[in-house]
Image 1: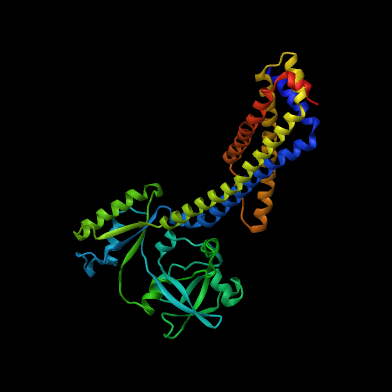
Image 2: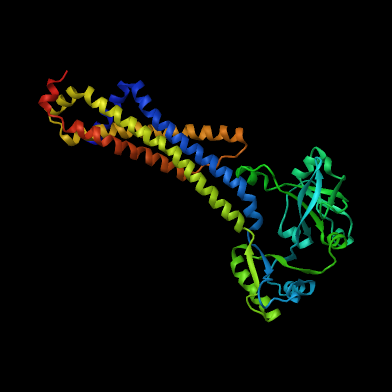
Length: 406
């Protein structure tokens, strides 16, 4: 018996028991659709959460002086003159002082922490924010010392009811809880990229952010012109690692001291969180894949029942010349057709469910052709693995005993 005859015979047998064939496939359909759906939602959520964080840090790094080093002196901090020397090398796209400080604002009758970042024209290019309402600082505002600020949409919503209502209003900020609050006019509201990040980790307190121009900060809080760290953007993001080493060499030549400055890629934190989500996504997909194993056991069970029901048929086929190999091959083909068709239907169902669930949870699903192909191969592999035992049992039946069965 050739392949085509075996295939046609298998199809005819499956058509003869359509309801049972569908119920047998159901376990595979559920298993494959679960894997496709969970994988797509997991990858979509992972990209949605870490994509912006990684994008903002790609090709950028911070440089800071190690104050615990025995060779450290205050003169080795990043003064304006040193920053200008670094810019003059023309080896980097943007360089800016990096100042981050914790300040406070009264929100809903309680003082809450707001993370203040000091902005320069270069810093706004390096660490870009997505403005939802309003605008960025205008060029002259960086030097005017005007009491203006841009804040994140979460803070704007909690204080003013909606981000849009915050524009043109004043927000009261204080350096400490005991210091007097100072009014700052809001000129822009930007997206808080940490909202999805915090929710994914099960947290509720989303960090709040604000930005002042450097002149505003120095006028109100700090008149010093030296900084503990700077942030740098590479001309070619793919060569950030080389630029990090290059920056250390330049600083060593300027100061004459080696190993005093440390560098750190801005994308490191996002990359670490991305690895955590990847592991979690893999685990969830694996758990969903367990249902595939259960579906495979169902296939084997039904195929064993089929062997018992068709014992006389097997005996007749052997009596007219069918070999053990022919019998085994036919039952294997039946098993593969069941799981293969179940895999195709499972992929279709997984695609539909992924889109529906994605809309419900507001996460764009990210489907992978590779995962779909692998799922189909796995489902057909299950047909082979779990179909071998029933096929072998059918092939080994004694034709005389098979013909005597009722």
